[in-house]
Length: 214
Image 1: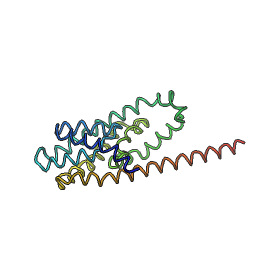
Image 2: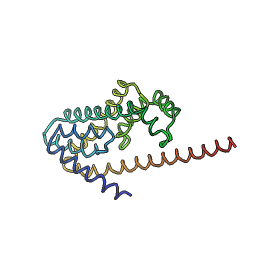
Image 3: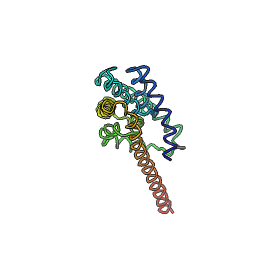
Image 4: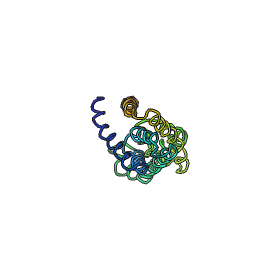
């Protein structure tokens, strides 16, 4: 499993390094924006290499973190808008296939109203999850400016941490990038386990409902 994931992510890492190396700060923006819009370009590679460039004096730490954070915010707006304006289409055209019903969306609305701030903030510091969290936030119609504030607040610590690591380790940034992949794998495993548990609970619930109906 791990070699397969590595074979998928390594070309993306090489692409990110080349873009940042060739374009500098605009390259950081071009990579970090889609990374928050459900396109899994690894922010670890982008910002670690950006930190390496900070150590070489190509641009400042402040500039790298600012550009990366604003790019993440812009990308999050795109994913949020897709979820927000695609909500009815999701229900009307794909609801039956995806088993999404009006009460599911109502539950998502209530959940984000109660836990949305923390979910958006902390998920921005979790690999993989950070790439997709904006989409359900839009579907649940979390207030836009609150969503934006917690998105930006969550992006800055993650991007600052990666950039500082890249700056400190210098030419060894690639080794740190490889170590951080294990965090990705752990988060992915947790997501798969969580989805599996939800499926099992749903099937058991359906079976119990059928027995009660009988």
